[in-house]
Image (cartoon, rainbow, N blue to C red; front, side, top):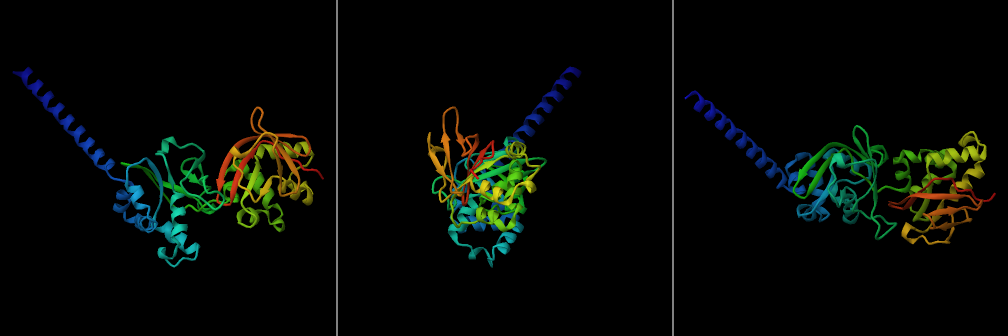
Length: 325
């Protein structure tokens, strides 16, 4: 009899565990059955996002089947965006502009926080520089995930990650993510901090303003990394940026820029001669990987390609290009 009671208790316990497991599965299933838009509508702090999606005719897209990642700004973020851009309310934002801003928060694949690594991903937005190549987003993963350098650089930081939906995942963010310019993307990536310092070293040059704007755009920028600048300073015998004569620095920076063209890596050809903003040429070689031979017959490797910005495109290089002086 005692043995029977023990077996009965064990059986009832097993039923309880199965019941709990089924209830948890039901809860997970119920959560996952909600679309991105349904989850946003149920969150009072995302009411501005929902209103924006409906105004831009994107709610149906994010309510349909698919596999999206949405970086969702809260109401406070939308209020700050409207105020910073001089809009009285959401209705004052042109629909076309609002649509691209919203698409700049969406990836076409599901990316959970555990899948995020520091680097570039592609959003669904398009800027004025290219009708086909969508805007790049820079994710930097530390204790939190910063997007395009955080709010101070027109980006945002993830505040709550991995809200599961039937058609993807939502990450709540603290800012509306603007379409990044070349300067925004350079600032966001710490590997370009010396380049940013060079662009802003002499404010009267206006380089930062030019590469943040649309005049003479789109731009193609071949951007030296920090390591490239370190090697250049050693090679040229300069103790640092302040030691470089202003005219030398200005011409050198212009030599890395092509104005009036958004040149993607697929458009580069072997032996192609490229005219730069400095009115000097360099030559592309595709043998053994994409390379640049500068006016001083030095060779630089193109190590990162097609970082699409709203006003142009960036390709990272591992050596500073030297024009003729």
